[in-house]
Length: 101
Ligand SMILES: [Zn+2]
Image (cartoon, rainbow, N blue to C red):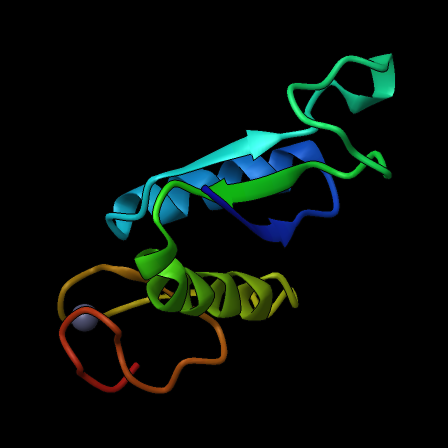
């Protein structure tokens, strides 16, 4: 396992793990009990961390995080008129079908 990302808070951490899972990347949240002084690994801070099961997933995982951080900028959501998928508000083309939003 390799340490991959430090999330700002636990909901963010779990959301990212879920996104990674959808991308086919196995990951886990550590430090989730850091506030209580209980952890599965030694730690020096209290932020939840995301660890990847496999080092070779790191490039895919990085893209997922990039998307996540971009969408975190509160750009809103637009729904594609063609396929009804939700897209971040700053997208010009639907990520799913490629039609203009
Ligand atoms: Zn679409």
